[in-house]
Image (tube, rainbow, N blue to C red; front, side):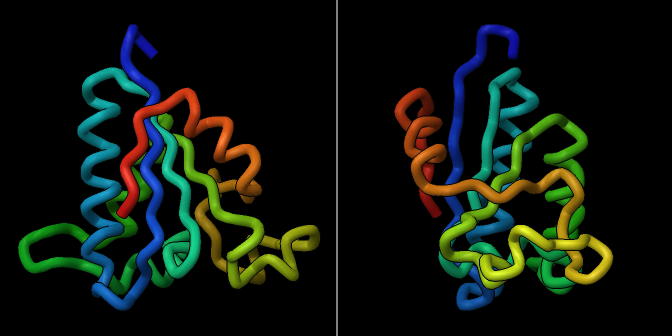
Length: 128
């Protein structure tokens, strides 16, 4: 980080809005990274579905790339992606998760709410 801010983007929505808030969140995150900010995205509630590349590939808004393209760009730019360990559909398999069995973005990590709360105290927070 080059004197930028810490930004936490929390994505709680899944397919109910056709991924619009997720695309908005990752677009915002990429813009913030371009401005030399340290950006963390936390997927929780229905938003945990976006940790799957297979699900993210199915989402696009007319004239915009698919969600998985935005997630890959975000991760290549050193953004941090965390998935709620308490609310994820993968929570029961968390300790034995094999990426070959359950498609999962490679750099995504499970995280509990206590650690996210600590990050939030030190960040500007956007919730979608």
